[in-house]
Amino acid sequence: MSAIPPPIGLLAELTHRCPLGCPYCSNPVALEKRGDELDTATWQRVMREAAALGVLQLHLSGGEPTARRDLEDILATAAEAGLYSNLITSGVLLDRARLQTLAAAGLNHVQLSIQHAEAEAADRIAHFRGAHARKLALAEQVREAGLALTINAVLHRGNLDAVAEIIALAEQLGAGRLEIAHTQYHGWALRNRAALMPEAAQVEDSRRVVAEARQRLEGRMVIDFVAPDYHATRPKACMGGWGRRFLNISPSGAVLPCHAAETIPGLRFDRVTERSLEAIWYGSEAFNCFRGTAWMPEPCRSCDRREIDWGGCRCQALALTGDAARADPVCALSPDHGVMAAVTAEPAGEALAWRR
Ligand code: SF4
Ligand code: FES
Image (cartoon, rainbow, N blue to C red; front, side, top):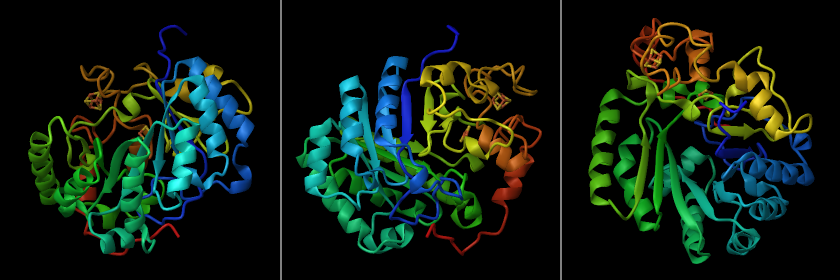
């Protein structure tokens, strides 16, 4: 047990309810229902158990976490337990008054999503008229409330050419950090892959724009940029390695090594209503299944990067090869790497399926 480090981060998906309809949503195709969500007292117990387990950072997510009316109660318990809290929000359900009650309950940080730098395009992607204007107003209110602000944008073919404008907007909004990460093709997003997949030239241009902006903004705004895997030759250490640093809890209480883990057939996920978080982290079948390196096939088993990228992403391996236990096909050493070229060579799709 001692060889397994405690987790540092917990992503609490408080609800799958969401007012937006983004086509890149990586939540499951079948969303969990409101009636199945954990109640306030259970989330509060989870917060105390997480802190006792060693978790330092709490990410309150969804869906849209502010759709939960008991968010303040959950936050207050998390703050009492010593967790640093980050609210991941679309912002459209929040106003100044609610933001202030959240701040008073102990909220430390707001991560506000934007869909584009330009209002009409942003509202089209979000499938919510007026969303962009509300987000701009909220960013100002976050700063007024004295909370740290990160702007987050999911990138895809429809907004990758606007990366420079997205960076400029985040700067103008006074964000300390900008996270721009390419769409992860899990859940709902997978069905939109052909329409969301960028051109290789767009990816290259965006790398250049980000590199220049990082130099210009050094010391003022941090830019976290995650380029698309599909144009790479080595995978990323998804989640910092399976069961090594992070855990997710679904709205109904399933404890997951990553947010897409429930797509993997045959894995059983323990629930916070059945066992303690500590028992699940150290002892559950799902966390131990792909933890470390013992599960790895070749070429990962004898590769000198096996404790750097941990074989890449299990859910991506599943989505692209049908087997979660194979090397991530992003890796040029994987016998399945050819599938990446086949996917990126597919004709671009135009029709997007929005979430609602
Ligand atoms: Fe990573 Fe496996 Fe590729 Fe090595 S062979 S770089 S461990 S995915
Ligand atoms: Fe599940 Fe990468 S998203 S391991």
